[in-house]
Amino acid sequence: YLLFGRDIRDKTREELVQAIQSDQDAVEIPLFIGVDEEGGTVNRVSSNPNLRATPFRSPQELYAEGGFERVRSDAQEKCRLLKSLGFQLNFAPVCDVSQDPEDFIYDRSFGQGAEQTAQYVGTVVEAMEEEGMGSVLKHFPGYGDNADTHTGLAYDQRPYETFLESAFLP
Image 1 (cartoon, helix red, strand yellow):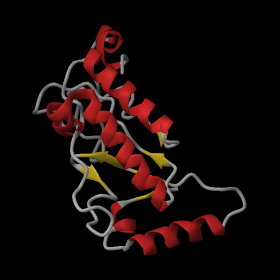
Image 2 (image 1 turned 30 degrees about the vertical axis):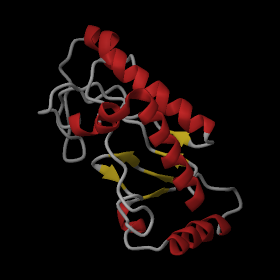
Image 3 (image 1 turned 180 degrees about the vertical axis):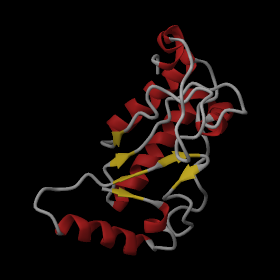
C-alpha cells in the first residue's frame, strides 16, 4: 500500500500513525506500507514540517557534504523516521545513471558514473537492510537521458552495450 504526498500532507505524527494503523487493522494479512522518500526533489514524509523540520536532502548534496558515510547516515535516519510512523518499505534509492543536468532524472540521481552510482546504491540498500526497511531499486533499467515516463512514453534508443556497461551496474 503506497502513500502519496496527499495522504501525508498536513497530518500530525499522531494522525499519520493512526491512519497507517487503521489500514493495518482493516486487513487479515499485514500490509507493506510504502512511500517515496528519496531525498531531494521527492520527499513525501519529510516535506511535512509536522514530521521533520527540514526535508531530506538529495544524494548529490549528501555525498558532496560527507561522502558515502553521510549518504549512509542519511539513509539510516530516513529509515528510523519512516519505521516510527509505520512504514516498512521506501521506494528508494534511485539507481539511474545520469551525469547530465539536462536529463529528466538527473536531480533525483546520484549524478555520477555507473561505478559510483553502484556504490551509492549498495551503501543505501545496506543501510536500509540494517535498519529493517525494505528498498525498491528504481527505475530499472534506468532512465538515462530519456523522457519523463510520468507524462508519456519513452523509447530508449541506447545500444544494448550501454546497458551492460552502465545502466545495469547499479
